[in-house]
Image (cartoon, rainbow, N blue to C red; front, side, top):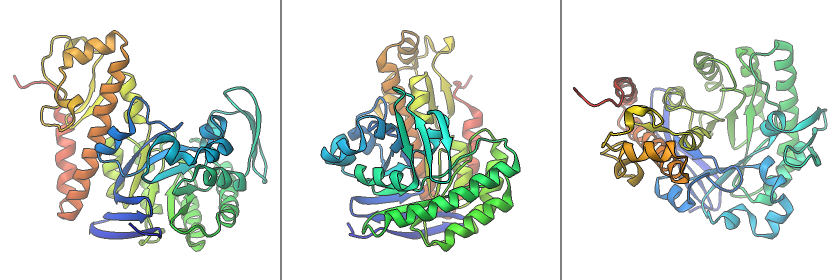
Length: 376
């Protein structure tokens, strides 16, 4: 344990990095996947299970928690760690993406954004200072700057305007965050699908000397190749001694390819959301348990997995649960999916330490391509 927030790189293989982030509540092994605990819960999971699968850190959402149960109430109840019984590191996003995508009647100004809640229509104002204040009330360990995320495709002038506004908001967030020993505020690189804007954003944030840097505004509708091109432009600009976080990404393939471009941290709702909709992620690729071909399949999802949900239940049973809309279907498939994601991250970390990341990526991709059908 440490009383400071630190990051160190333990091994590299090409641009891929294995490292660790240390902070008072624990150490995060990187590359890391952060399960999304939007409203203080990783949906369909006990947080003890999430921890047992290998998660060092989870993500909480400022927008949802400020609406319910409320930031000030959360502080009176001891903060998000105590509230959710997760004593380990938590990263909170700024709420900006949800304000832009979920809230009603938004009005954006230099000061911030005013909006009406999608829950009950109540009016709120979110400024950079208020976002940091809320994250402080939640007592999160890593706090994100408020930014404006523009969905792609978009006009270059609109992308540039949002990028410049996000930089000004980053300065205000840095001031509001101040000095908080053991905690960190990350800036967010914007710039859409325009490489020169990404470079400008990354350079300006680097000059602010923050404790970590995120890449935002990707995986919002653009092809994977565009996302990877933006990482190729952005990651070399960011400081090598600070963690890099690709927000809202993604599929297992996205993660592998992004690690190979120097990304250290990921989050995505995909494994939990897919689990609630009958889709399993495995080392053999995706398996849609709604398909009739699973109705009499005795095989588990993965006979070699350490996760009981993956190893101990037949596909026929899981198919039955999904088709019957039983709650247990979402619980078991989410458990399986998070187990696979954490297994993938451990495989990536091991491969970097062994200087075989290229081979690991090729082997993993080939196994996905072979699929899950039994040998004839």
